[in-house]
Length: 92
Image 1 (cartoon, rainbow, N blue to C red):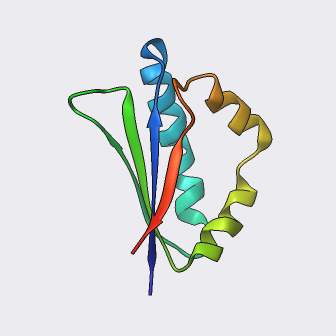
Image 2: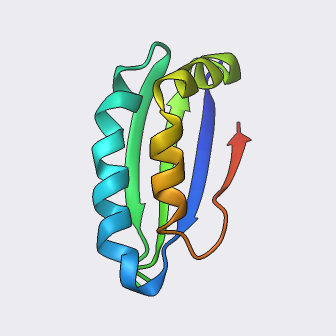
Image 3: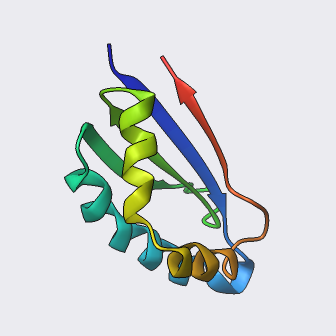
């Protein structure tokens, strides 16, 4: 049975476009990861600073394995764009 991962982000007001560009650039890497069934980025139409990435995985372990493809530099870079820490969870 597949698992859905929902990641919620809130950009700083002056970093909305930068965060969207950054997250969009990550999508091909996520989609190419073993066990990824789908991945999409959505932006809140009322509050554009809010964005979510919805990922569907074969398993939680497959998602954990995919995190090896995200560099420490990328994590540090995205932190400079966020108004608050990202929130993520697994759903079924």
